[in-house]
Length: 419
Image (cartoon, rainbow, N blue to C red):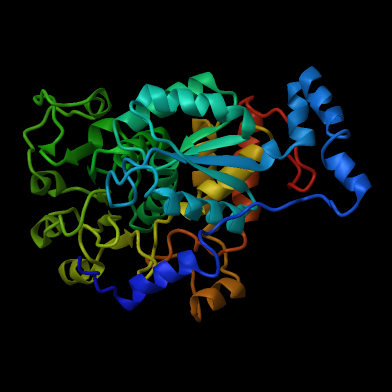
């Protein structure tokens, strides 16, 4: 068998994951355990005291264990990145990576869990049975349409946040960036004609959140592999049916003609120059396929000089990156021991991100990205991932929404701004 030749970047990725020890995450001890007395507190007999306290009052687990700062990142490996159904074990490097991001950006601890499940119900039952361990559940890389069923069932069964990041994390960052882009283009979300290419988890969740933010459902055209999702089709899931329009439009070009907004969560190079040229004046284009966008920025700018564009890549302006959302959203939810991450909390995250992009950018952000200046405008519609203000802006906004909507169980954190 011939060993494939790796590029320098591919070899660097393997080296990063294997050296000096395998993997990217580990556990850490948070209490001293260097003497016999400390050992007797950490384990028997001292550990019996918090055990009995939790037996009498389950909420005491938040006081005496790490539950309140521990999130499970769980996947069945059916939709890993752009690689498809690679299986749960092959998805483990991604789940460990999510753990790195949770810890690095919001000091949230993570156990990554890869589940071999023969059915959505088996996956649901597995997660429900292990849920007492955690303060929150982050579902990851689960293929549509099963991801919708799984999330809804777990939300109904559990009293801790269950959040499918591929749905809602993506939707929240898109929402924040789109509101700012439309503001710059002199357009409103309520009046904008929106085309979304991709009708999986990210596409459907993003369109539902945009409706909650004020978009008109009748102004949204969803496009999948077979073309426009319209009322005459008999092959639509219940999740796609909610966006089925009565329309004569059938192709992506039909849909994009006269549209104000294009959002791509699909695949590489699927948008033609002709389709981009057919959009309305001052369009907004979010081409989020990774690593190759639906239309490349250099191509798009040859066709239109009046557009605002975002991609999923870090080497172009306006990166739509979920790391702007999930660590900070969970941080806010965990800090008030929220029972869920509801729509109001998601909208609060959108608003916090949207507003932060309007504020002056600190010098440390400019230094991190090698920039001399950066301010709200066509090339800066969403904050940068390494902006240290994210941790002070997003979690309190999410926590406040949890309190207002009645899903918070803990007192308002003392280190947060006054409620």
